Length: 349
Image (cartoon, rainbow, N blue to C red; front, side, top):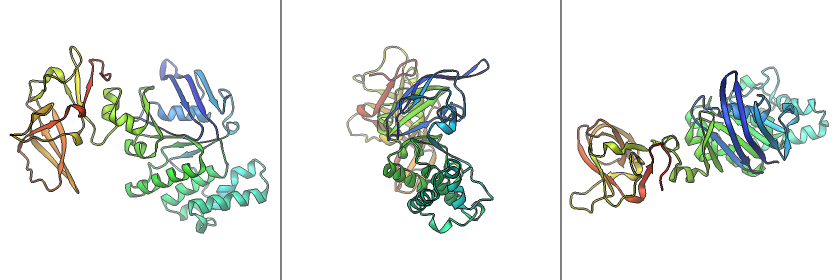
């Protein structure tokens, strides 16, 4: 196992700077997830750690050793790809053994490692099958097994679940997290799926346009997003954002709610909004919306409403609520549920 350190890492393609000075410390045994939209640079960062992409500037250290110019095979890492990257003409056993044989690992040790990985991943019945005879989930287990038998200092995962259906992705998330905890191996995982990121990570690294927007535990990023980008990227549905200059267009704040001077953006999560009572206490935030969309999702419903100026506001209600398209509702939130951002989109307070 080993810690991974990025120091002002940069990557340029001609005149285009794709990675713009990223610094990050990943602790020994930690599970860190890089998350962000497509094209933000997260996979490029992972490939640079692996040595599959050269760096333009800065330093990468694995276990305290600078690896800027070290070949991928010499970095003591194992990578799991989204397309499995299995050899189709080999059995599962042969796929697991291939890398170890290239390293001239003794046969008895190869057999021991394969047996241990197969038991851990529950792929023992499939060792003599070819990849084409396996389901997507089974192939992904084999791909992870090939990484495990290496006993590397770190695992790198490049969107390994993106080819699986939703139900299987959920199952595999649990298996990957359980496996990483049992092995205690430093892991860096890339995904664009924020639900996947939230459930897997010890710490999240939100990447946008080649820069790190925020680093923290999933709960820290959910409760205190540093920017409007993080606020809307973390959480499903995403946080509602309203511009302060539109405060007269169907919504209001109590006078004692702290806010930035000048222009600002107010954020409130759908789960923190609820219909207000006509005779109840005035909430810190209140808005009048007209319902124009309803999503029933089991025990609750997501209502999509419109303010006077056409801005959308999403909020949750009980699945048993009898709301209809066209209903006009008053919704509100308490002061501790409100998020304030300044004119540059940075958290205030």
